[in-house]
Image (tube, rainbow, N blue to C red):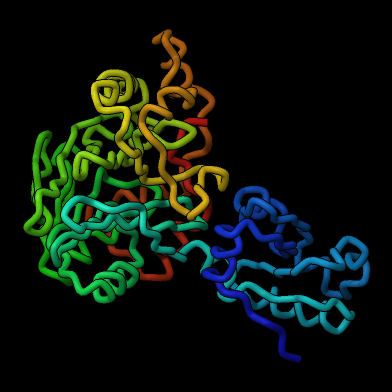
Amino acid sequence: MTVKAMNAKDVTQKIFNKEHLFILDVRNHADFEDWKIEGHLFNYLNVPYFELLDGVEEILPKLPKDQELLVVCAKEGSSIMVAEMLVEAGVADVSYLQGGMKAWSEHLEPVKAGDLSGGGEMYQFVRIGKGCLSYMVVSQGEAAIIDATRMTDKYMDLANQLGVKITHVFDTHLHADHISGGRTIAEMTGASYWLPPKDAEEVTYEFSHLEDGQEVAIGSTTITIDALYTPGHTIGSTSFIVDEKFLLSGDILFIDSIGRPDLAGMAEDWVTDLRESLYSRYRALSDELVVLPAHFMIIDELNEDGTVSERLGTLFANNHGLNIQDEQQFRALVTENLPPQPNAYQEIRQTNMGKITPNEEQQREMEIGPNRCAVR
């Protein structure tokens, strides 16, 4: 019996459009509690696959009669079998998630985030299942990529679609929660690959040094990417001001939280840097800058068009992490009761340094799970 497939892009559009969806997740309870597909109007039932081997009759009363149903598992196979059982039992509108949670983890959705002077454009790539955000700055036939994921074909596809040449690739810091695609894109295109040197003391490859105050022009317009040294998440963390309009904050500042300083085991040492970056360097910037972070934490941070952004002034008014006047209280917030560190974060850091070269399946396994770059 053939059942319908729903791919990650389909589910992403349902999230963007705030549509209803009922998800039957047949992974084990621990995996579901740790990481699941989140939507504004999604409802869930988690029943491990092995509990359904003898039939789905017991769960039928728990399923909606008037709502689209999506069956989800880790890799796809179990969800197809359960979906077939549901169809045989008379459930009408059933689909399975094509590629399972592995495909969900890897889906990138490009969304236009705004216009730049001289006809340029800013694109945001939303990695919806992982909370990662990356960027393409486009101007006069050229493009720059910031904080690329390892799904490099998505950036190449958009560049080809727009008819632009990728000339510069940046990482705001040495990532610990996902494998960077920056170096690969640079090798494929001949672009310059930029890293903050304080984060790159152990890397095994050549790179361009991204220093405080560095300006890199994209295209022949006045658009510049202006680097702003903002340590705290890592010792080299660097923000970018693009076209005096956008602030790419990396993992220092998010919409509803701030960056954690402990992913290199340096929380006590870097907390002062984090406070200085947020409370002094960012305070000196224009409130009108639109903050574009490298991650989002919860689905409610998405705007109506699917982008993740907010004015810096609004964040200073509403983000709790920017409004802790007592330094000891701030220190406690960012060093105590932190969420678990990202899965395989040490191996991810080593991969991003060029010290190890895991194959594609190993890279997938290293990245599975939610992002955990923020202070709660």
